[in-house]
Amino acid sequence: MTDQEEPTIEPGSATATDLTRLPDLADTATLPAPRRRARRHFLRKMVRLAGPYWSSTQKWQIRGATLLLLVLTMGQVGLTVWGSYWNRALFDALEQRSVRGVLVQVGVFALIFVISIGVTAAHLMVKRWLQLDWRRWLTYRLVGRWMESGRHYRLLFSAGEHDNPDGRIAEDIRITTESAIALAHSLVFSLLILGSFVEILWSVSGTIRVPGTTIDVPGYMVPLAIVYALAGSALGWVFGRPLVRTTNALQTAEATFRFALARARERSEAIALIHGEPMERRGAAARFAQIVRDWDRQSLAFMGIVSFSTAYGALLPVFPVLVAAPQYIAGAMTLGVLMQAAQAFQRLTSALSWPVDNLGEIARCRASADRVLSLYQDMRRLDAEARTPNRHRIFFGVSDRPRLVIEDLCIAEPAGRILLEHFSIEVHRGERVLITGHPTVTASLFKVIGGLWPWGTGRVLLPGEGSVFFMTQRPFLPEGSLRDALCYPRPGNAFGDASIRRALECAGLAWLLPRLDQHDHWEHVLPLRAQQRLSFARALLLRPGWIFMEEATGAFDPKGEKMILEMLHRELPDTALLTISFHPGLERLHDRKIVLDWIGEARQLFPAPADGA
Image (cartoon, rainbow, N blue to C red):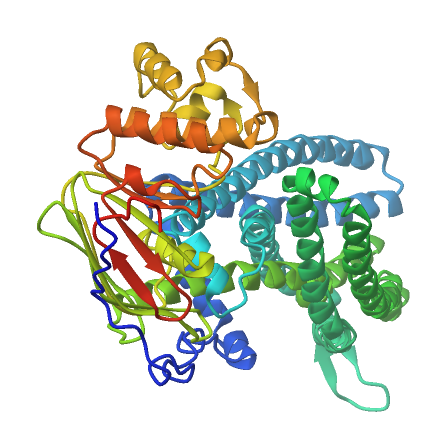
């Protein structure tokens, strides 16, 4: 080997690395629509997101359950109407002091009671099945999009309101589906009650003459009920409007608090080692203080609507009796008719007051649905950007031959600052390439080849033959058995015991063989060096055509690092290896070395210098 350096890339000049050369790439993303416009089109977006559920592969089962829910709701309304006439007959029998009449009504009530239990139980089961099935469908749909093509990672760098996606999927979808179906049922029930009891109230309230005139008003209690309900709804909406805003803010603060606690749990070892508990406590206290502030604002909003609802509800049973009392005193209606009129008035006003009565639940459902929709819309924007040609996006494709090709690559940060430019390389099957230089640049190149970093320009053509396996400094080890962690991302039964034994022995982990089927938190149980060895064992099981490592041997000592790489060369001789490492002495294990310096300076050394320069 020689020390001759063969520059194949022109270093960027001062003007070439001007930070204003590329625009702010984060700003080139389609920004979220203004809030006012989003609110106008909320229902349309909701239908676009949730509507396909009723047209999914199980559409006939879903539509059948929806129809059955409607029929059972109509049955509930029918029982309510029946109960109204039973109430009238009972009070008429009491007014007539008829023992036989009272006993007959007791029997009728028993029948209504039994049927009501059956209908209510069936209605509850069908409604809960729909709520869970819709949640399942929507959860699978969002998780499928989120955990595909690196969207979960690219979302971190894209514009939009998609913080805490795990909370949006786990909690906000649950609230949205449960509340939406419950609200839809109560709305249909109220509309059917409205139609049924308008007729009842009109027929039983009779006609009243306006005092001092000869004008008769038929069914006078109907317009009174409508005026009472509309006035109450208008005032309730005024008192309840702040509840929508404060509920949304509180749910966002709660989600942020949960996310921070979950992150602290995941990084508990690092926090404990550097004694970061006081800082975490202060951060948790600050986030909970925001919850307290939003809670207090919501409490004030609740106070207004609850105070009004209490006064409104207290007056409701008394008002219709007082209004109908003149008819009863004049002998125009019996006691039973009076009670039926009062009950019909209450039913009618309750149906008309549906928006006010459900204002809190509507606010809760709207806030959660907004959070789910914003995540869904931001993922759709990511897909649209990926499909749209953009001169500020790196092009990804597949080579027609077994080689990795990078042409005139420029890597930039999401804000537009250039990290590397005019970088080209071609790696063939079986080559060993060492990549070193500035950690920020090398880490960005690793993400570019992995398809996670689209910011910049140029072309990346992945090999047309052979899978690509990426090894990070800290491999991901899912919770479960050690076998599952080793075979990830394949299932635990994808490889035979002989292959697993061979892989562990070659990686220096034979001591873990007795624990293959034990369940544990392996990221916390195993030291980092053992985790990195486990990643090499994975590579031996998967036998990829291309391996790209980013400090995957960072926890090894020089001797151990040399031995594990030699083992990899021996076991996978036809596999191309691209190694990002900053350890000295690795040049002899590679065919060439590439140095990627900060902001555009790149050097390729052919072959790798013998002295490790």
